[in-house]
Image (cartoon, rainbow, N blue to C red):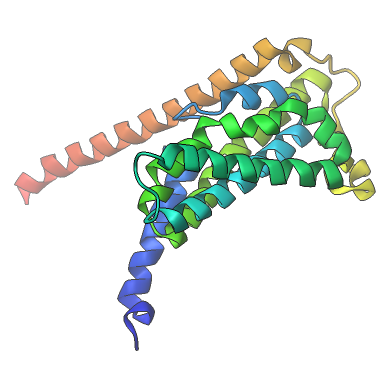
Length: 241
């Protein structure tokens, strides 16, 4: 049995991947914690399908750039690493932009300039510089998948909430992403529901994202208080034992 197949090695790797996943989805979520890439996040999330489209595009660019940066990390000097990373990211964005224009032409037109602007997303350059350039390919892939997924989930959730409150619908125009068969996915609220226009306007995006950040901070605070209380009980119980 080689070192790579030993249970202890596989267990250690799994623990590392789990830690990276938890960081990308929650503790270091690029949209809720780092607050990076907010320009496209706030601009296009007035419905769910836009959030899915831009989220998947960003995730794909992050995956390609992380893999390539990790592969060349030992061959690029520190003096030129940032221009090289930007060239890699720009190339990946160009490929994704062309593919979306070819296969998702209508959605590509709606997202417009925000697809090429993925190249300026600080979250992508940040992961290339802070993580992929310092870690092997397997960790870079896991980091890209979960950092991208965490960012995409916030895009989709924000789009869903804004669409629901601002239009009274959910999953409208999903056929732009998934074809004709998805036209029946639209969910309509009651006819008595009065949409709140503010939700799909730019101020609505700021308010909704602020509520998301506040909710995450409240959950973290609650967890910290529970941990402190548990430690306090343990300290009080141990002397009696």
